[in-house]
Length: 248
Ligand code: OAD
Image (tube, rainbow, N blue to C red; front, side, top):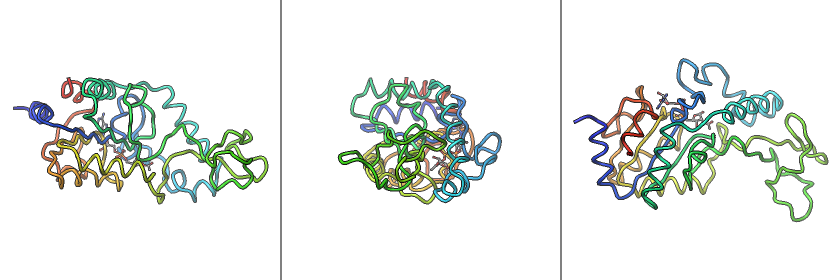
């Protein structure tokens, strides 16, 4: 029996499915990954400069422009067959899928997935760098719509800067999302780990949580990942190739 057929059998038996996705999920949509040697963002750019608060404070315009370029790239991208297969499965099996993503693109949502648990924030979201001290009474602390245009936009009163609403290195994950992801990992019978190198925690710790809870863990990745050792099964394939037949 092929790995895909074995996984299909496990899926049919599963009461609850948890899917953890990483950058490889969106690779076939043309969105670059981070750690692939060819074309990975961190092979070409310095994450300390572009994905830390200190990097943003040191050169806000450089970081803002880099995220603006990534936003343009993702806006042009379309969900691939893997994103659509997950959304279709969720629609056919209401209440049985928890979809947890490390991706900051919106391709799962545009494919039709709902209640996506976003561990690393959202590329198209903005928030204040610091608590803005001059917001009018009643304004939401995170509402950046009054910022004056610029690169990055800034508060016209206190000069506070707008930053992308993604999680940078050294920052805590959004608490609610992390809790929801841990609950989902601890309450599934089957976890699919799709397109992640498994190098960034706490996201990379979720498959171990699922295993502790007696779930089967299946990896879909064309290359080895740091999580292969704890998987029951590895499907060596691309997300957009493996997910449609697996979830059909
Ligand atoms: P990585 O770039 O570290 O890993 C991408 C993984 O996807 C690798 O294991 C590839 O082999 C695999 N891959 C490549 N093409 C694929 C395809 N077509 N189908 C399936 N898999 C494929 O990305 P992540 O593991 O998601 O964090 O990285 C985790 C976090 O590190 C990101 O969320 C980001 C980054 O720094 C933040 O920005 C906070």
